[in-house]
Image (tube, rainbow, N blue to C red):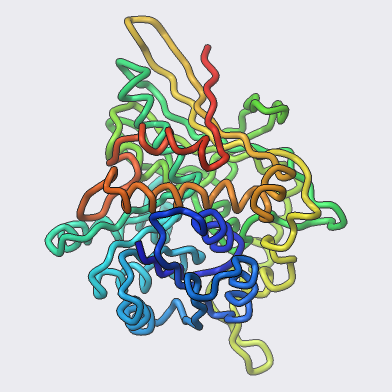
Length: 401
């Protein structure tokens, strides 16, 4: 398989590192706006022929199309912030190759009632074009990171193998990670974190379908495995709520994230000051988006691994019935930063996200997953994916009660 990797930040680097020695990978083009960053990753991989470096502007569809055709790639892997999804997605369609991302096209809140009604939902742009992709005989596989991605695969596995009826599917994410030496240092893209945490969270209920609530609503304490323990989780906008109900029969779907009071306070302050704004404003004759300024002021998550300690847990909590009896399970994956640095020389949040995309590439390359159109991970058999998780260094677990 030949892959055009658009975006070589922390997750992009992790994808390249984990794919490097896989027999199905023929070439992975490292393409980024910051070419020096691609060269840094290439030097780490020590194979310039297999990992050529290219400058690319992910906002320019024509440049992405030309790059895909130059190398004759089979797949365009989108490892950029989701603000770039539309041009990369459209470029893959025009180039006639498969596409994969880890977060779907962005939402737009309802103009008049944002905390009750949905406006444009995550992924609407992509799913509206499903027939065109199917007619062209190519696949857009959306949301194949850890959340969304692995969490969605767990939901489908539970439906097929663990339950007769499912009442609620709730994705829950928590961690005890710290970054030494910083008062505030997010371990993932702050741009994406602001987007998902300050937008109205989406909930799905059978009969009502999708509706929204206020940010950070419905707090609950969830007991995470792996030594993490109890963490307060709150509603956050996330793709699983838009994906799972399309493929899995259930009555309710939610996503809650363990952010912590300090992080929530910082996000609220950014919002009050207008620093979450993603649209450019003029400052002393220069146009700049406030959110981009915030991101530029913070340390790059890709280079924080040596300062991080702790574990992170991603998983899916399913409630329902089996053989007439009430049942609950939590399917999860716990990853440790120390182990991640030792195995991959990449910090744990980016490896726990990136390994899912690499498994997806392997399953497409080996034709264990096949399809055309626009689909989420739930559209495919979960067993081949889950069988590979341990081999990639991210074994899954299950807690039942």
